[in-house]
Amino acid sequence: MMTMMIFAGIVIPIIAAAILLMLRILDNELDVLELENVKVRLEKELQQSEYNQLSEKIQPHFLFNSLNAFMSLSRLGRHQDMIQGMEQFSMFLRYRYQERGNLVPFRSELEHTRHYLAIQQLRFGPRLHISYDLDPIAIGSLIPPFTLQTLVENAFKHGLEQTPGDKHCRITLLRESNWVTLKVIDNGGGAIAPNHAGGIGLSNLRRRFALLFDLTSSLTLEKNAEGATEAAVSWPYVPEGDIQ
Image (cartoon, rainbow, N blue to C red; front, side, top):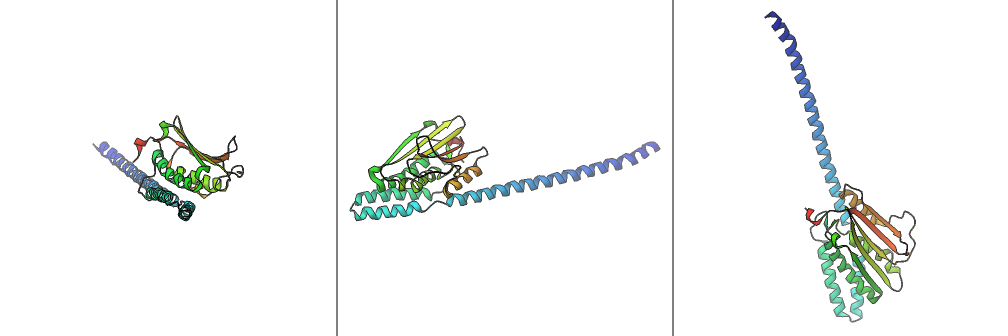
């Protein structure tokens, strides 16, 4: 009996100390886990805030050119063209200020950009030629809002508007396995320096893709083999059904 009491007197304090130590370690682990959760949540909120700010940085260049085009049509007495242009402009703005998620179907971006191109067509008339090569499988893929418009607007602002004669703009979309590639190709003049990253619009676009996709995306601006300016963006394929 005495032996059992001595044994209990030795073992019980050891067990109690071990339990207290385990509880302390578990408490510390819970604290670390909670801190990690808070860190992840703050990082997501910061990324969302940064993404929203980048999405708002749309150049006003097109707006001023549109108003100038409408005034020119009015002076020339082309009132029907001016009315049609203002309708396209209205639909362009309506999409611009709609509530939307971080990703939208490419088909929506295409429709929005076509309003933009319709106004440019009024500005340049038969000198402007727009063509499309769109993979039906990729039409429903999800993409950050205003991606296509940014690429097309960049083509006009830095190339086509300064190019005399005929102006060509080609939009291609292709899905290859788990990746989608969008290209905007124009015959705008001017050289592109090696490793040229483009202007603010393209830099913002790169950052938005980096914030939204875990897998690597890319955006390049270069002269292709035919001497045309080619802006190309590739990103992981996300089907339209995955929109939240």
